[in-house]
Image 1 (cartoon, rainbow, N blue to C red):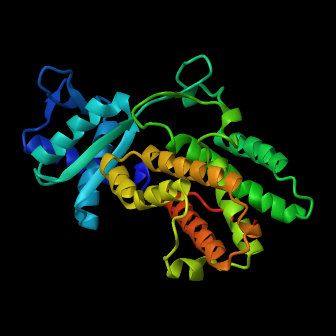
Image 2: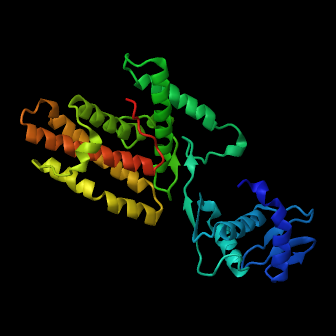
Length: 314
């Protein structure tokens, strides 16, 4: 819900907090006294409400309306103490139970090339609309296949753009600052969305060339491990479930990104060493096709968890 949705609730929230002796009137303002800190203002002298009041109202509403058992906030680290205060107020006011799981996971700042935080309010930064268009144009230059018509190129470029931007942000450690560099978003030899997409596309191309149905191939998971590299790939595939759990526990999507990059790198090495299409032994060939089909499925699921579309139409 938008911020304005809670406007009609703010007066009642303020009165209730006064009634419960959590808030007090102070020089025509309504404040909440905090231990060893500046007071938190929830209504100004001119009767205007603040973000704090809206945040309290939204927590109360969400808990009551949706009967949820967990709330997670993602904000930059500068709001860490603020949300800790808001959560404590909601618990003291009994808007949520004392043992309710509500947590603020914080992240670092996006910096410009000078190492300064990008500030949206200054108005001199690249807008998301222009960023998407700029990366989309760069994406088109990567798609060199002359067999594609204009419509297909636009469709692929759009997915590649979404992939590049989302992956760029999610692949960074949540707690650290990072410098935004538009030229690195479409890099095809490092931990980027397009690199993962490129690996996936290569696999699909090999499977199609050998008339291998990905879904049917994976149904029978039996394959042979015939080299040290295949052993390493197999071990990495078996790690996937633990990676998902660990990502969820830490609320750090960069863990999944790094995993997808590593398994893509392993496939890249495999691709260089194995010319699967030219293998004459049918049993060995099918085994290797099955292995790369499982890699493709792993990449597809991993990107799906990150909310990134796969380039199915290539």
